[in-house]
Amino acid sequence: MSVPSHTVQNAQHANPTSRRRVGWAFIVAAGSWLLYLIFAITLAADYDKALLDASEDLGTPANRLPPEIMAEITQDHPASVVTAVLLLFVPSLLILATRRAAAVTGDRWGVWLAWIGAIVLWFYMLITFGLFADPQDLPPLTRDLDVLTVPFVSAGSVLSLLAFIISAWNLHRHGWRRVASAVAAGVAGVLLVLSLAASLASGWDEPVPPVGLLPAELILGIALVVGSAKVER
Image 1 (cartoon, rainbow, N blue to C red):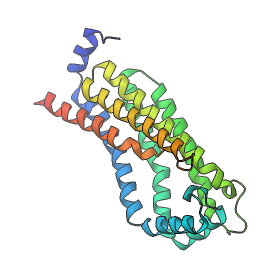
Image 2: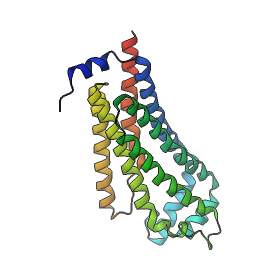
Image 3: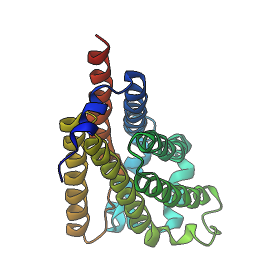
Image 4: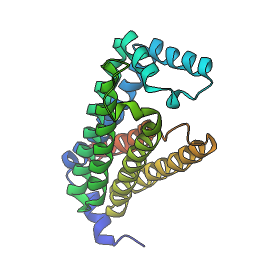
């Protein structure tokens, strides 16, 4: 469906400050995932290696390891808790970004999906904190992590990616950096499809990763901020 000419004209004359606020919200959201990746390859590197070693020893995918084994590894590598705490914080930044986008477009589906995805991921992360309990006496849901990890992480990731796609596409329809917002939505859509295909190919031993938001959020955020600067000049 074509965008009405008055919508495009309004977007062209939109307040650069408003556009910059939306752009920076998506850039900060992308930056949180970048920070997570940095922590994962530094502070949590030994933890990930221990998981892979246990996976090879037991002949079981890392996400299917017995929870008591995961608890022992987690307690042997307490620095990994930093990435876990960060993952509690990251979803809130997507909520903020989609809320700012919704203030422009009037759409609420992106915000609602961001909230639902965040709740799913938060609930899952809270379950994982049970790994710090006695490995032989884990909390009820924590002892089922070998079954819950893939569906919970995948559901949270899919909902988060859909929230971004809807928000970016509605910015496109509203006339805000139409090409960049369409490209960002397309990148997120392609990554969602590829991630789902990879998870299916693994026999659902690997979840859909939420970090797929990183490149799409950067594209949209930078385009909005740079576009604002051009308007000011």
